[in-house]
Length: 77
Image (cartoon, rainbow, N blue to C red; front, side, top):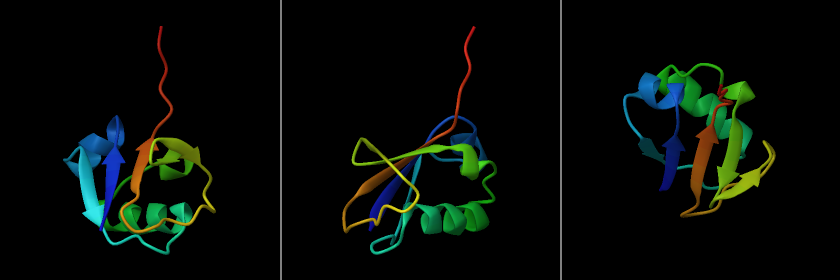
């Protein structure tokens, strides 16, 4: 299983700080599609992704036990 960390509006939409799914062998892009459909998440295409606390591109392949984070852009003032 893989832990998917959600931040900002994604956390609100999913109703949880994280979810756990079987993502081993999938790309980050495939996981985005999967959880967007399952949890009705919006704007995943503009999120930054990280695997094990290191930024990752959409074509990165997820390994067993990896922790994935989706971080939406935020603005401050």
